Length: 98
Image (cartoon, rainbow, N blue to C red; front, side, top):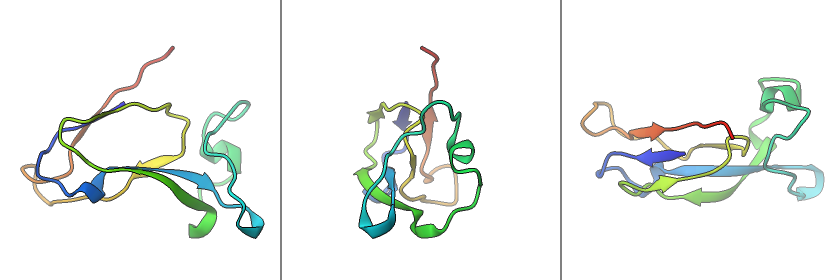
């Protein structure tokens, strides 16, 4: 769960979700599933070529938006903004176990 806290951040600083890029332009999955615990465990490495994933969904930054998703979805901040606390992209991140 991510809550966007700063009202003055560009829309392009939201959250992006990715799918694995497979041979022939085929898109693979977007979640890390059992028996793997994380992406490093699933791929067997921390380093992959930059074209290993394709952006699938981009959620724009919007002040006070609460974004809910399962932690095992492949995701990242779309972009970052600012150099001081007054203007930076700030979020509150929450985790829970079900």
